[in-house]
Length: 185
Image (cartoon, rainbow, N blue to C red; front, side, top):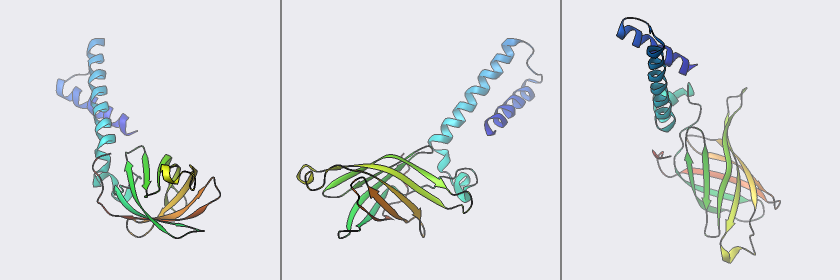
């Protein structure tokens, strides 16, 4: 809808600039060409950088994706062991998000991740599926595994939630930001 409005605005501006609507197919084609170029340029700029601007994201009126910090301190609390602190990295674009957790024993990388917004409560959650890669020294004690996590926003930018794995383990996660939002995606 927004793209159609932009295209119509550009067409109206061109008619106003030239003083008349296109008279020939070639003039019409030139108008379509110019409009397409401008719309693609605006869409590219928006999807790469502009979506992060406060005018689009404050109040989530246009962009419903939160702008998250890049670096996190993550407390992993398994149900059957002591808590462990990991270093977390969240990278995001307008259309995607990826999560990496690193400890001295294992690296966990998201395979799929997305934000979900409950239509009724307007609660935003971050849901992701991940695979782990243990270090060679820990491969026998802690083999590769797959799992999923559901995180919800707590006070400020803190994320808390639970995880579970295909090895029947589960626990809690608490993400605390340690760096400001990353301008790079």
